Image (cartoon, rainbow, N blue to C red):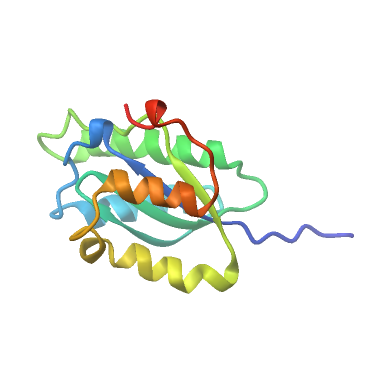
Length: 150
């Protein structure tokens, strides 16, 4: 085959350090815009962003040239630097060390977009820990509860 053809949709999820409520709704959209810029600068596309004060969800399309782990590292490290420089009083801002990354089929994209968009409503009945464990189970990812939370 002469070309490279990739459809690599990934649903990323990670929380702030110790799941602290550090993401204020006053600047959350700016954070999402910055995360989208990081992806754009690496030939990726942010399809949907959402979250709560203690975590984020991103649906992104990654190119074949951007490994998943590198994408997360770029997103988390650069956005932390951005928060420290742009958001007054948030020098304590940190992301948790780990993350979740779940592959999404093109046919499931609209459902994942809606899920991420409706985070406020979803979290009226579910906390982040339960949500994350449910995602792990849905994707049949083995885990040890002792190592899920930092």
